[in-house]
Length: 134
Image (cartoon, rainbow, N blue to C red):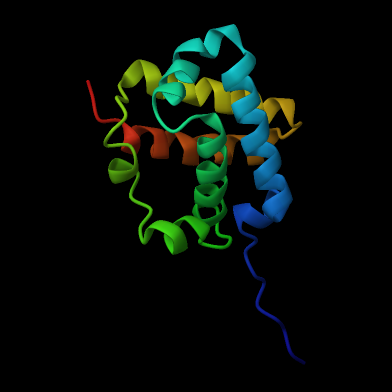
């Protein structure tokens, strides 16, 4: 009798692939653009290439970050968060604001329990890695 090895499902798959990642990114940036509490994060994005650009880049990044297609790496040849954010002042306050917006996005999409906790652990590590100011 043959027993197939149980394959561990990636976060990309658990989120629903590209559609799920796209929904998370769209919800996140809707919060950034519309929530008064996220005003400073929105203004920071407006100083750069803008929110539309960030929506696409974050989608590309998160697909690979969560175990799906490596769109960001294919386009930019790396996925180093420090390098990606070197031109953006990311201190503890901005890191925490970004995380709070992502937490709201996850909740708004009805993602809860273990998956929400796991996502926030990954996002917390990533956000701290992107921090470049005290």
